[in-house]
Image (cartoon, rainbow over all chains, first blue to last red; front, side):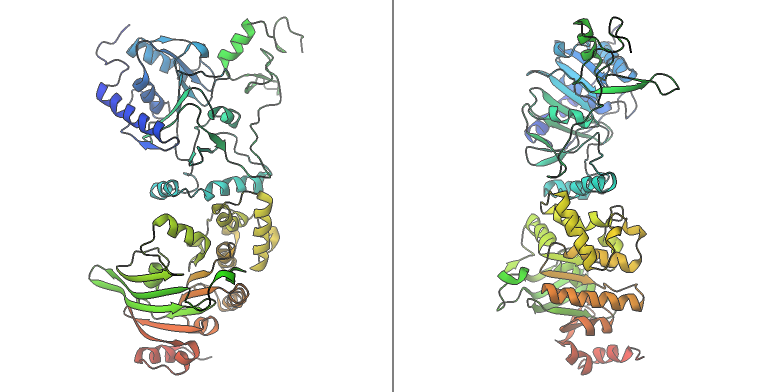
Amino acid sequence: MTDQAYNFAYLDEATKRMIRRALLKGLAIPGYQVPFASREMPMPYGWGTGGVQVTAACLTPEDTLKVIDQGADDTTNAVSIRKFFERTAQVQTSETTAEATVIQTRHRIPEVALTEGQILVYQVPIPEPLRFLEPRESETRRMHALEEYGLMHVKLYEDIARHGAIATSYAYPVKVEGRYVMDPSPIPKFDNPKLGGNAAIQLFGAGREQRIYALPPYTDVVSLDFEDHPFDPSKADHACDLCGSEVSYLDEVITDDKGSRIFVCSDTSYCTTRQDEGHTGRLSPEGEAA
Amino acid sequence: MTMHDVSLDQPLFRVEGLTKRYGKRIGCADVSFDLWPGEVLGIVGESGSGKSTLLGCLAGHMQADEGKILYRGRNTLTMPEPERRVLSRTEWAFVHQNPRDGLRMGVSAGGNVGERLMAIGARNYGDIRETAADWLGRVEIAGERIDDRPRQFSGGMQQRLQIARNLVTSPRLVFMDEPTGGLDVSVQARLLDLLRGLVRDMGLSVIIVTHDLAVARLLADRLMVMKDGHVIEHGLTDQVLDDPQAAYTQLLVSSVLQV
């Protein structure tokens, strides 16, 4: 079914142009939050309106789109956004990371390394890394302008003082090209090392907060830490129960009310590919039974 | 300490003809003075006399309309903002009357003291914590309270914490706005004692605004008396308080209840 009443990829050309300008500015100043005139989208805030607008501005009819929600291709958010663009842009969609040219993601970076020519679009709820430390927008902007980032370390200090280690496990703040401190959106800190030196273009869209920021390919991105408490991209200390991978980020799934649990790859595309290749985990039919 | 590269034969801080207007009203007018290294200057006067306006202009919180402020020969009014902010988190410090204005209430005592260190690039947790603990000791806060929030502290402790937070980077010049306001007299006395010790040990230059003449007498080397935005009398503290010349100063001195 097609909806001819809509322009290609839902947004009108003038809006896309406005967003592209913001994207270009964001790419020119990596990590800097560019204000843009975010539009009402036919979905509620918090469902990825920022990401959807960025994706719409990037899509061409030849593109192949993949949508990820918490690593999975088959959860509500991913399915509805994918359908949205199937209807309004008639682009091809795929669940395979390597086949996609544009990937919109919520809270994960795919396990498979991205390549040049791919675009990764993040959905961002709160773009301002300093927001919970300094509530005044006028002040946080000035802090960015003057590179006053001592406060960010105060947060990490408080973590260590209270928990004995940096307890921030997602939306872990990073410094981009030695200049801007950036919120990488709520990806697990396990994914932080993939932000830096990535071959793909990474774009961040926050719809409600009306901000766009970006990382061009091969940008230098460093996770903030202390000399004596270095950054640690941790994950659950298990192997995937379905594909046996020991290096991928895992979801813990409770399977009954007696405390049984399994660990599975959060990146479903990665996990299925591995299973198709014959890798097995603890719960695989022909694997050694637990 | 930090005194080694401060020249003793030129003033640390020089103010010339400083004026601040609020529309047609005068905040403070034509204020000039020199502050020398290690000197404590008291600014006294009644409410509305322009003391806090003057302090705010001096510390760069407010933009003055006319005049010059020279800190070690550099004009802080024409200085670019980044430079001034670096100055205000390294060589300057500001102690607010209300500790809630100067502290981060949601951050532990250690984090409050450590913030300035981290702002100037300290990145070793162990060192930051050690320095913070040392400073808490110096302002008589028990080391075991390092992870408590300022909310859990008494008013006097909050004020001492604010002082520790400000002095941790060994500033040269400290601005204080009624540091003992709102504290009961015995707590005030201990705080003054502490301040006097720190000023002497660290060789700090201080500009202190107060309406409490006892505070001025104890801390200040020199006094400036303000009324209606103008400086009406200026001299050594004992001289001004024991032999006031201006009519208003005489009134001020005689209004103090002798116990």
